Length: 398
Image (cartoon, rainbow, N blue to C red; front, side, top):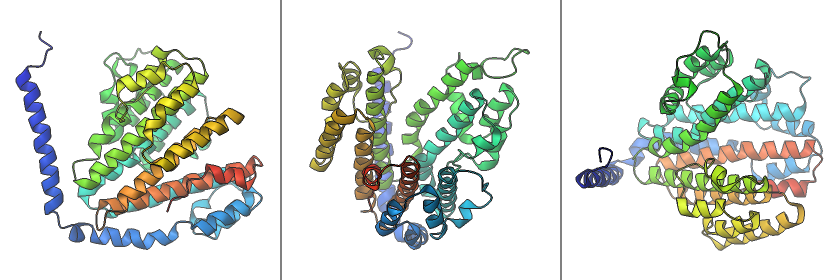
């Protein structure tokens, strides 16, 4: 009985949520957006010309080698991002590092001139890079990867800056690792959110010099759960634009869960174990996710997942992906459809925003897709894939 919430408590919580939503709506209506976002929107509009055009993407698809991709990018505003990279490094790795640098540099620049009222929402979008970076650092430690090799994989586009990432990378033992992670706001809140029994919250014995592989795996698994639990709150209550961003985060969570279920089904993982790997925050209910997790195979998951798609275009692409899957057994066909659907959904929603946060978020989304597309192209070239096959994997919205 002590843990049961009184009915009047539930009513108070509902009333508070209603008041907060009403306050958000009122704030959105009363804010004079041309004054608040005019300067930042003008900056973003000027930066749009730096994003690769469809013609330039076609040019990249037309070149034969990863080295040719690198040469082309050096002529398209990426030369600064290739600086100080070893000449002996394969071109595909140089391109991946340069595009990561470029995106991080642009993202941090955008955050710097975005009004404070909208920064929380943008940082919620970029929180996935904090997750990526922390997971990269932790797994590199588990696999005994070198510092330089690990450093090249980082994309400091989130709230954890380069200096903080370097401190985590240079940590000598578990105490220093936890201390370095906790020095950032994202890391501090993440560690605080961990269960009481987690190793990060227990007093360490004197003889333990490093985190065990099992503890590292557990810490990495918690990162995704934490991100999706907190990203919606981090988006803030700044009106319609913040609501749109939260909606896009929900779509990402749904797509991640469906792909996780498909992959785990392929590996023969049981329903109970699959459920432990799913993140909160999407639009699919627990009952729907449970039904997918209990499906007999990928084909049955596909039928249940079709409701993710709103438009007939998305439904048609998903059906086509299923046919390709039957041909070659590659789950990547489904992943591309999800990415395209979310991209269309994102830009359709955010481009309707004028003189507001939505226009800034829309540009940031386009820049992120540019990075992903270039990386797909250069990897495809290095594997000898034909241009037509690489083109099928790209998200070309804009």
